[in-house]
Image 1 (tube, rainbow, N blue to C red):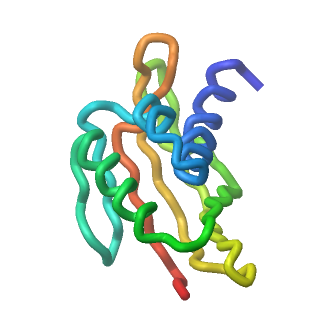
Image 2 (cartoon, rainbow, N blue to C red):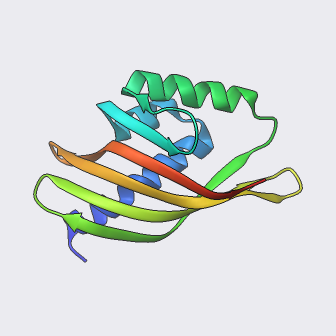
Length: 130
């Protein structure tokens, strides 16, 4: 696997880990300043890195459990020198029970920013939720 392909695949993983650990500095580092987050059939879109961080902080503050975003079947659909599109399944779990909270899928559009890749847009489609 090329180093570029590996870096692209790691970007959604860094995003999920930052969400789970409530690591807002790490989440900020993986998003472009003008990133957008669309929830199919839900709120939003949330536009801009600052707005996304505020949204995530608010959601985390309302949680009484610990959540984990498990990304699977991560597929790089397209990739060139400056952009990439990555799709992944989501299984969201909670330590309250433990239980399955939701399943769905993400589509991430990434852009190259210097030596790293950042999320310019992400779309979340839930196909089940508790």
